[in-house]
Length: 518
Image (tube, rainbow, N blue to C red; front, top):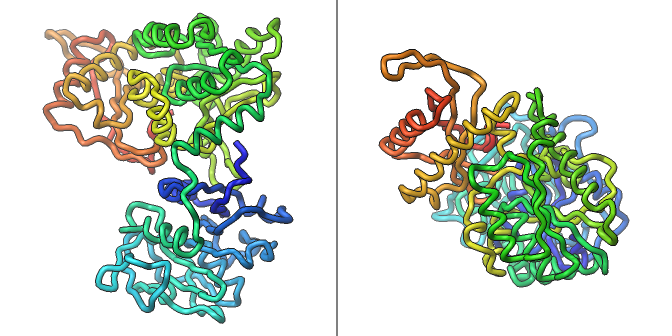
């Protein structure tokens, strides 16, 4: 989706794992923004319709040789700038201030003390103090010429500085993370008070822009939509149907890796909605054969991605004008699979629809949600009245149960996990807990343990239950079950699912873990 004609905030990324949170905060304020790596930005000769620049944090030390830098400063000289963490240090260095490695590092919460007024801190301080989140080893030790101190901490004398004449504002802390109290106000003040932005990223404008870009890209060609039945692909299918009507062909591939009874429910919903535009393909055995003896999760994802593409290309071989493959790829998928904007951000895992795709494809990819977060897609789905059965489902990975069975996959393991998941999810719904949880699932662990049932020895698999709360999947906390609920659910699984004699509950947040185990 190319929205370069829109007035926007441009985020220059120096490799921070939380750069996407900056984008989220701005999107939440109904202003459009884009992320670009500093490498790509340095290759630009001009920028258009940029109302403000935000420089992100990053893992590099400003003190080291060849640290990330901005070479084409002329492009941003007359545009308001907000610089965060590494960006804060970079601005100080560029303007001949001094930055050095500090013996007094700051990691975690810190108290920020107000020293002077700033349009950036309107309503931010309470009694001239604010709790902020720090994560840095380098610090600014000499103020650049033309800059003044706005705020400081115990260990950082220049934790917040500004040049009002040039409209440059820098902060050592991270206003984008929730641990900074009222951090959104920093962005709100920068965007509206300093940059004078207008709200241009509402559900209505999103739909208009997405539809317009689809029509422009597709023209009169037909689009094959990879419909998994999940929230993202379902909302996409509805948007495509609304936009290009008969040019759309929705294809549901039955991989055999779905949850118990789920395929039948999906077929029922979409046969009714899309009628002749919906096609079902049974490829269970193909996927199971291709995954035989495969243990490595990255190989699983790539095999699944390649198999999907092979099925789609075989399907379109003798059909005219099908040039595009539409996927419900989201921003977090891209961030975790690769560096979306060419930044030095670390790759976490491949997603089957991103890093798992073959390099050469006959079909051209159409990914209208590639720059959107899960909650933005849900809101869009509500706007266009997507079926609640689909819209309110917990997220489900494209590779399905293949990445919830650790190690190799076979039909028996699939059936065991499907039964575990069925009990778990149904119990959550019975106890009115399902809606309070962002995502819940079970993982089959390839380890057997000794148990006792009816005075007899058992030797069966372990399963791990996972339930998290989140907004967009980029960060998550484990759900704090009442002891009675988790105990009863675990007992029910052991008693009703053959092949399981032990249940554990995952209490790891994201980060440091991911939501899925693989």
